[in-house]
Image (cartoon, rainbow, N blue to C red; front, side):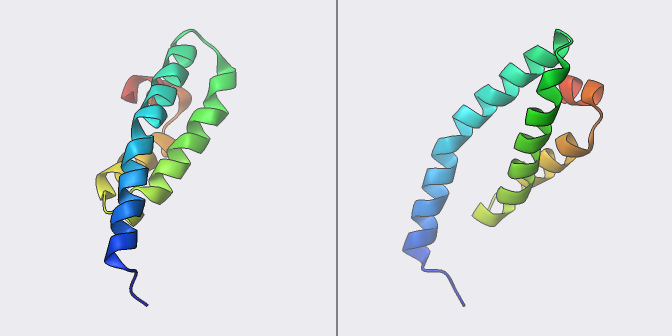
Amino acid sequence: MAIDPDLMQRLRARYLASLPEKLERLESLRAQLEQGDEAAVEPLRVLAHRLAGSGASYGWPEISEAGERLEQASPDERAAAL
């Protein structure tokens, strides 16, 4: 079953519009990790998992790939990767 191109375009636009907020959240979590706040590890992993699962669905496989790498990284590697 093919998705309606107009619907897909609207979904992609909405996803794209949500990315700045997600990037701000990633930056905030990175800063928390750099300060030694271990409570940031799980929210960062969850956000990375969501990006890994969603980017390619909307036509941006690079977002999914970056999310996967971030999700699989250790907490120290996550902070450095951001």
